[in-house]
Length: 469
Image (cartoon, rainbow, N blue to C red):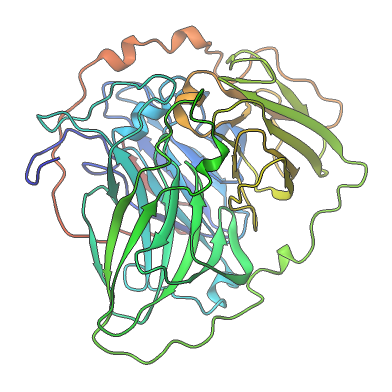
């Protein structure tokens, strides 16, 4: 990609990506999402606990020229979530074109955590993605065999080669792997240590010192890094020393040997040494859920299938008719990489076995990376919302796999209740045709600029945030 060359992209309220939406536990939010694209889309609130009809999955299509207005109350702890399209069969291409944004939740606990919290000053969002470009600057949207839209150029917050000039000695980065297929092994160029302070679903109870962290598509992490006066350091994506246990002789090239410089960070001109990080940030993590006698479900992930089936918009795969803890056992049965994402909940990882790879399993999670052969045992619970007609999804969040059918759906119902004969919107797989993506995408030109934080719309009780896709 050459400097000064424009690329046609899609975005929310702009040329690429979308505004950071911010809300507080207890707020009622109403989102107005207007589709100005030539194609049908949806907007899914990834990591959010909310009614199934507001989830924004494949059963809430937004046709061109129409507006979707979901409303729900925020009833979960502070966390870094995100939003993105979720049309069945076309999620990857729409994210790849630029549709994604952060959704940050606050609560009393996060207020008291004594972590960096000045958005855009010492609390910085980083949406890390990759792209491939044609010689004329347009996006190369050619799927590679079995790997889809794996890029060879990284972008952070929608631009290449970004820089961040810190004005404080301590900075918190909220990092999203917003790529469609790429794994990132994040570390700093000088090998310095940093602290994990949050994962998908909220803060960790104790800051964890590390030197690197693995992130698969859809996962988030919050880290705190201390900078020296006049420091210069680069956040990098480096190769995976264990190749995530993938045998390259019979697997796609997942790009695990690739290395990228993601963000150049310069330290402040002055400032005193930061104090020790606080402990006891999230007491909900002090004990694992009691799953004695819990219902157990198994999910075998292989090729583009879960439990031997590809996604069917008219089929309910699981029915949850209680609000107690369940145990979900998720196994990667092939030599491909997969990860597993569940809508409407944050789960705890009880164990990760049959693997030596060490992905992030701490804290409340909604997405977990599974190396070949790995088996994750999860404590999962669905509370507050029941609906026999409108389903939630579970799926691989490597979007090429998801779009090829590695997804299932479940309903949460009252005890003894059965699913409705008509599921969701009533759409089936055949109504999502390749003709949708064959239409001409609108051409917009993103400004090439140094790193700058996204705007922060504030949502208050019963407020409305308008997103124009």
